[in-house]
Length: 256
View 1: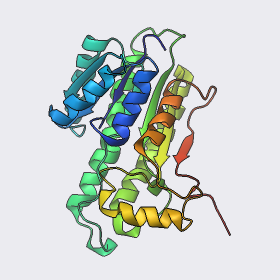
View 2: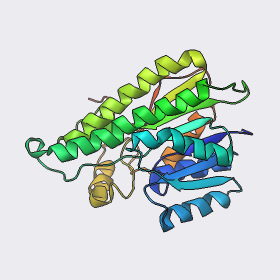
View 3: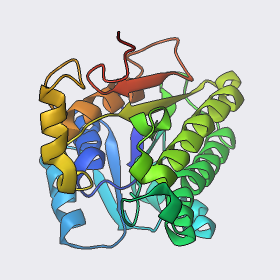
View 4: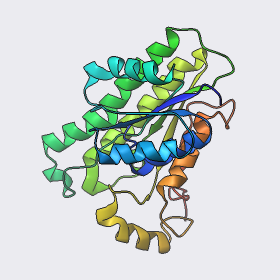
């Protein structure tokens, strides 16, 4: 994948970092993103260097829509033209609880980061690709990380579910718009994954997986999702776009 350059948002840890490492191992230059230029992002950058890949790590709050284009430009000045965008940055609810107690603050936070930011960063990325000549030898794609909650209700996290369902539709609309331009768009929907976001409830997830909620009786690891993202971003599923890929051990398979 010579010349491939990927930006992975929210890549200081968890699924984002796992995707970055998987892409680095496949020969991508990698742009890491976090909220701050901190030790976490520095450690992530070292992990990419350890893979022998070029890396650029820089901070951006993805909800700062006005800063998107300049941010992409700074990455390209360091690593070369972007070929790949992985929209992984996201937030959970401020507090789990009764749907009737959800605050406007928590709702707006989920929709702003999980949906609006993904939409407009995809837009800025796509405009860059369409504004220049692209090598037909390179695979160009957007991979959005949403959630199994784009489909399955978690009533204690209603605003999160709404934001991920909307993000899943954003994936489809961009796939339709960009397909004629040979830019693939995918929606990766993780299920029960062990991350910092799920740490407060991971013990419950592990038990539910053992009890049969997932077809494989275990929770997933960030690397499981990262490797799926990398497979999509390298074009290993040729002649596909607009697909939803559920990385959930069959959790959403209909059963009787």
